[in-house]
Length: 136
Image (cartoon, rainbow, N blue to C red; front, top):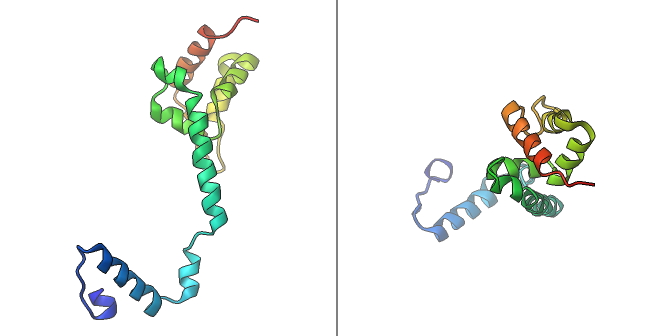
C-alpha cells in the first residue's frame, strides 16, 4: 500500500485490508484489467457442479479405498477426471487389465495421463475388479 498509494495501513485488521483493497481497485486499477481477471457467474456455477459431481463420483470408489487398493487422493483424482467405479468395471469387462490400463493412461491434450500410469496401481485395481466381479 505504501508503494502504490503512498499511505500505510494496519495489515493485521481484516476491515483495513478490505478498505485498502477497495481503494486500490477503485483508484489505481483500470476496470478492463480488473475484468480480465474476474470470473463470470456461469464459470462459478460450472466449478460448483464440477466439485459436486467429483464428490459423487469419488464416493463410488469407496470399496477400492476401503480395500486399500486406491488412496483417497487417487480416488478423488479418478473422480475429478470424470471416472466412476462403473467406468473401471466396464473397461475391465471389455478388455481385462488392458481396459483399465487404457482408461487410466488415456492422455490429455498436455500429454499427461488422465489418472495414473503406474503399473502397480493398474494391476491392483484390475486384481480387485477380477476378485469382485459379479457372476452373470
